[in-house]
Length: 250
Image (cartoon, rainbow, N blue to C red; front, side, top):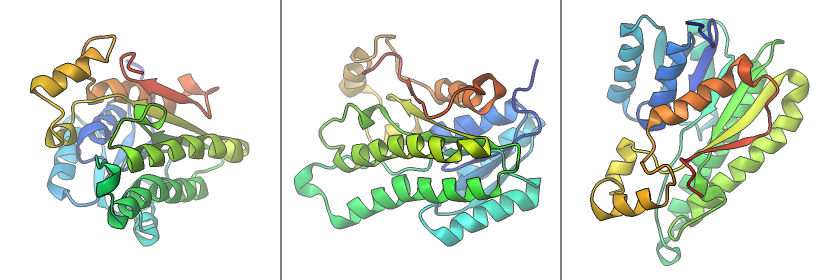
């Protein structure tokens, strides 16, 4: 089997659970050394690291709040200290609040902007600084709601629409450095967060499945396969793109 990411080093933010954990594991299986970033859940992050190491891969867990410049600096410093370089950044860390307009508070607004948008930019800025002359890859995780928002997703959808445009701008800015920048926009995906939000199980899940032409809820592995493709040489002529991975969900 060809290891498409052999000898690459990947930083995956928000990788202790869900889509981020799925991408981290898939990258390791493809030959990459992985930095599993987390903000609070060290136990889950260590489980991801242990899973990777148990299969013969290499990974470390690094705590960092991506909305804080000092934390981002430390995240990349520890990545380079462990693995000498960074080739791939996946900006997956995010906050998902379902709040109707009348209930929105400045705290909710700022938290979503700080993590979903500012965190993405700060990590991309640092990654672009440390990636070598061979270039690299930045993959931003957006959402279907960036172009098809639902009630209650006002601030989340706004930040993800902003992330879509961050990708387009950075693809043009960083192309001369051989850094490709792309977006993955997942549809409804079964994660710990989706269960906590009440999306899984019962009538609500049934209604969601009806919106998906392929007839099922997505899994982290569905997203991870596309993330491996985008980070690999197979996507060497792909940059500035938004790839929706949602089973046909609009």
